Length: 77
Image (cartoon, rainbow, N blue to C red; front, side, top):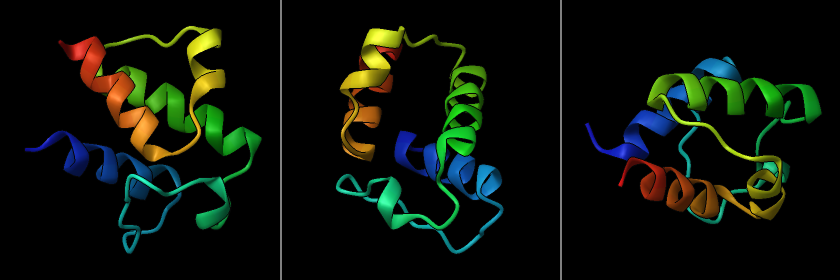
């Protein structure tokens, strides 16, 4: 399964919405219920699924889903 598809499944789980279709330009403003608590849940789920860890500094640089995807790709090498 492609990375973007895996990430999309995590978004659907975390936000309890099977209709979510992520795009690289998507931000928290584009997803109902994406607040600070769900953001933490999202990051924890991503870290768990891909067995990676983000530093606080990295998390602050993410502007959209594309930045998140690029960070995941770089950690998976």
